[in-house]
Length: 172
Length: 153
Image 1 (spheres, each protein chain N blue to C red):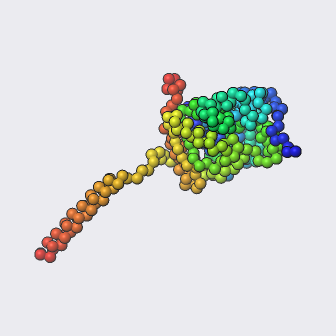
Image 2: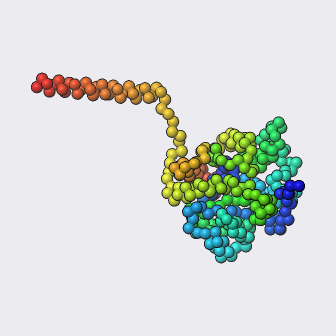
């Protein structure tokens, strides 16, 4: 019989609290800090948080204001290479935990794909540029015709002037 | 601070960029969290309550598969809340809760129909494309109007 991967979890009171938020802290490939440094720093903040070290960085869970303060502080370590996102499930929830699911958790594949771009994203964040959001459009055919005509007319008159000059030179 | 809906609604890059600019990303995870802490549901988001398909009916007709309606009952209210939107097309995520092509089509359709400032991009594959995407998103987020509360304040 197939194993039940939809386990009914026995969540703690904290995990069932609607004011509690969980955040994933993901390190970009060019990060100057390690996962353990992040976790140490989180512990040093002294906030009432549940902190878990993971392969991609860390996970913090606690009251939303504490979590946001921790994120704000932790970003200072490496502003352009620390990325964060919300997580719906509390840390170690058996419905999402890889250890219980006998395979990668659902969000893994997306994170794997997005991780491939994080290095480029941090480079772009370091060197910001203001660019136009307007789409480049093709020139209408009539306008293009007008431009060609005006150019060819200009060339014709230019050639005529050259010929006249040469004629004048010959006569002199 | 403007509430910005994004597609894919659980994107790490989009949510992070929106937050860096001081706006609020309308992330799917927050909506899922509400379901997770609901004691009536055994295994969210796989289980849905009888109210969910009814909520989903606002966004999808009765003939539409119940899976789409169930998903729309979570994504739909986020779209309704949006004051701006960023849509990234051709994102290579076909897994998990975002792996339903019809829901994806319906979500982008509703986001476009909302009439809020929308930025549409294609998922980047190279460094140049990624740089371009990040710059466009940052320029778009800078150009967003301040929310009514801030204007009144």
